[in-house]
Length: 72
Image (cartoon, rainbow, N blue to C red; front, top):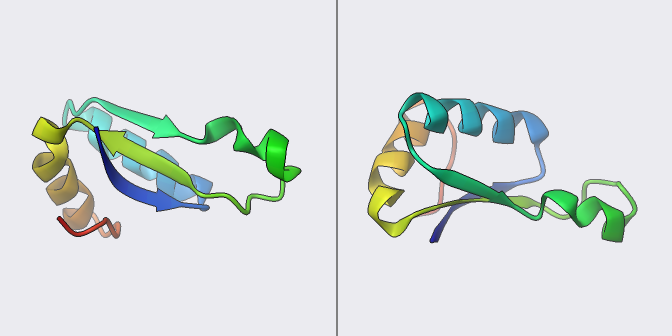
């Protein structure tokens, strides 16, 4: 799996999830439960991961819809 992007913004995560689901891209959001360690202040970013084979399609989907993603 490759990291597609990371953010502290829960709305960006929700938007990315909706876009990826709409395109049929399988993804996994990591670090969702890290708030228990950080005290629920939202300081640690969540990471959206996709399979290597889906990375380019997922990246293009998010870029086309205005979300910033990591470069290849």
